Amino acid sequence: MPAAYDQYLAPVVFRPFAEDLAARAAALHPRRVLELAAGTGVLTSSLLVAASSADVTATDLNEAMVAFGSARVPDAVWQQADAQSLPFPDGSFDLVVCQFGVMFFPDRHAAFAEVRRVLTPGGRFLLNTWGPLGTHAFGAALQAGLERAFPADPPQFLPTIPHGYSDPALVSEDLTAAGFTIEERQELTLEGRAASAADVATGFLAGTPVRAAVEERGDAPGARATVIEEMTARLGPGPVAAPMTAYVFRGAS
Image (cartoon, rainbow, N blue to C red):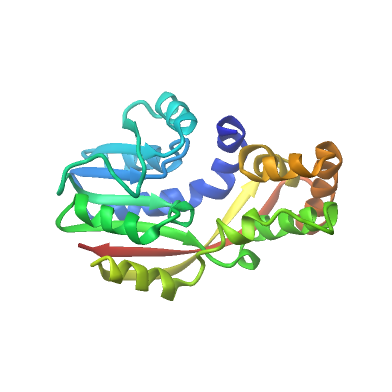
């Protein structure tokens, strides 16, 4: 999964927002940065370029992602860690960043409290979340393909997890409850570009939990063909480009 994710999804879906978040991070002139849910290091690599004087510690709950990311981006310090129980002393970092990861935390209140604990007084928390699935053209096309392939029981990973925390007011409320002052909240739409709709389909079907959901339902090859056909019909043949909307937040401890 990490290899497929990194090859087909990272440059198309995640890198545009990683470059944006890294630029926002660099503007804060951090010295010690903690990244949560770092995955294969898409944001990590951008942080090391944009905030070159900072020490970056990248963490993820998934050990396979940590192994892949540490090989891909060796200039960061990599560590397996649960965001809800961080293995760092109080006040260890002046910036914590998380790209499209908070939606996966079972207890976001606990995770946000941990972020605030490991921040220095006045430290910042930078994060982004996806907007509703309908505002993400790649994801919406994929979900349409899954619904066509499995009309009775389509996988619901995309609408319920990555796009399941898409109310910016709720995110702000949760951050405030954890003791953060919201300094910035912005809706941001960027464009993703891929060599083909089939490449994007491959990324989702092989590099995310959608893979297991499809395999559980049987006929994975047939489902893949249906999803690619639907995504190509919606996005076009050959190189494709599509808008993706997210929300960016900056909280101060």
